[in-house]
Amino acid sequence: MLEKERQVFSDKHAELISQHPGQFIVIKDEEIIGAFNTIDDALAEGARRFGLQPFLVRQVTESVSETIDIPALTLGILRADSTRPI
Image (cartoon, rainbow, N blue to C red):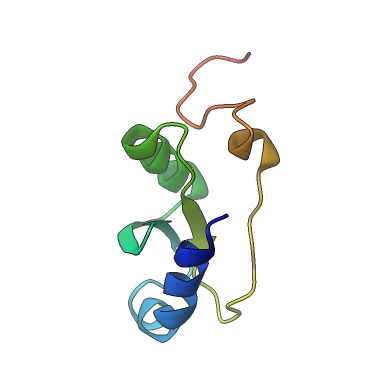
């Protein structure tokens, strides 16, 4: 799951680190959707655009291999766009 998105992040890492250091990138399929200052903003935009479809959020750091994994979002237990607790 998300192999295409991980490959895009890896392939574009040098460009992303020069243009968006420290920001959170949303990637869907082979498209970089946008760069955001907070993970909350990135998750909210991904959820707004893609709903329950999987998408990748990665922080642009020197290391390409850092992964943020939120299983509750992946499994649909929580929603990033939810404004009230379940």
